[in-house]
Image (cartoon, rainbow, N blue to C red; front, side):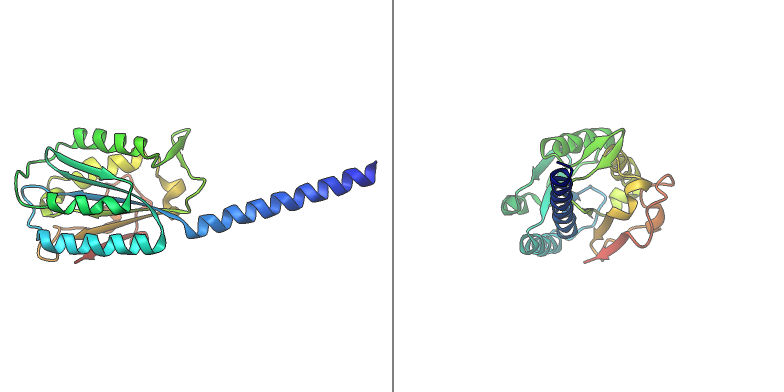
Length: 211
């Protein structure tokens, strides 16, 4: 009886080890991407350059078979999708017409609804928990006006806090700040890009990408 029980426990241990290994391997290869595009009236973004850059990112995500949410805002115009094939519907919306100031509180509410719809993150005790994804990567395409209005803190900072991303998850978080090289962001320091309370933001996990 004891011998059978020992064999059973040994078999169970092997199964658990194999299962844990499979999960760990999945985490190593699958990342989650949030792509945020915001156009403000004080930006000087070249829209054709922006479209080219988004098409390039789309191709990279398709090639790697990555999961992704895209959220675009231009004042009263919003577009969101979790389907990489639907990005083609976004490009006609990127133009200089009817660009208005963003209202941070409304913007945060709208994006959190999108996150909830597409199950962007799961929270437990106000902390981010992930089962499938090893790393959460944010790509932000904004301009000078966005940063001058401090929307990097009032929108992006609040969103990251609302998603439960903090010091405990900081090593599994990356932020790519993407902008037109002809529309430089004023006095940007990556370690304070989201405000003074985000100590996990460093030059290691935050990159300024000009296109």
